[in-house]
Image (cartoon, rainbow, N blue to C red; front, side, top):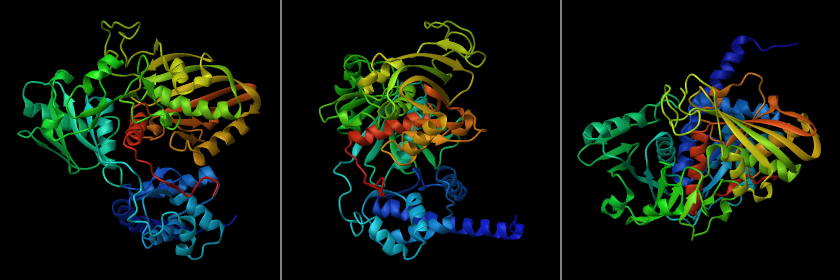
Length: 487
């Protein structure tokens, strides 16, 4: 078998590296000037490093069986800059594979056909939304990750503006601000903040990548007038979990300058529990209090949705292997919940989860068909849901995996369902994954009508990305996605 000389391989790597370096400012201009978000099979190319761009090109081989390099996509990204494009999400990876299969040629002519809907449309409105002020009520694990995502997405037609965070007073305000900023700047799980952060103690603000964020100190919503800070018609994202019903969350709506409330936990009563990608179209302009459900519900519902549509789900059990959370104790101590008082870093803790029942709020057709339980394990982030299902149609592991792989690539659930087919992946490999859940193909078991699926999920970051998608929906931000599926 012939093999390329090592110096040739090394030179090819350097050439690809140089092209990726040249692509970065092009991708940035498309984002800032055209509101075009470039992706590679659902993985954003904007604000990514050279090495990350090269790795994402390698990913295409794993999911499509086709080699794709920056030498294939660079001409397309370069040509996109010449076409006066209107706002859209454009998957350069899918375009690159199609361009390569046709044998290359004139990149501009190819894109004029594939992106005809947005060519010469730079001045056209990409959505009918209006800029929306966002307030984070609570600044713990989810609050800080939401801040990171919102700051990262500022611009590019996103329309969401992180204007303020609300926290309880901690005595010395200057020291408190520095500590809040430090926790945003450094994270033991998710790494350093990608950018710069500064603090103005007198103004009580934290500035992250040019985004000025007001820090409001209050012990309850009743103390706050958001209009005093120039904030109006804001969505208040409640990350505290203190209030989960309409009466409690309604306190936010009583504040001047607040128009809607979004809870980052399962809602109680008649509050709509929204899993983006599944039932987000149920939202109306009259919905003022909304729940983003739980991280586990977000992880399993998209997979259950596509499985039920394709094979039918008779019944099943969901076992969640969940990273420990701040609700548990570091060492053994009193806790009102069963078993949760035992040391989280030292024990596997059997506990309850409402995720199985919560599925019915997003997928009523599965009501009463699922049971669930949970085990908290000594890892700080990334969890797994094990779906043990009885299907209506027979299948096998190969067919089931092929179906889920296709769902992760060419379906409306591309942002929710990810797919991995490696015998070596472990939980830390999914830290920072932006999907709601990731199907582990190597672990799939299917025999006749019985199937067991293993779904990883970053219960912090992946969930936060789902919350931001709901915020975009609430702000009426709708991007055209090209190329269209099946095109």
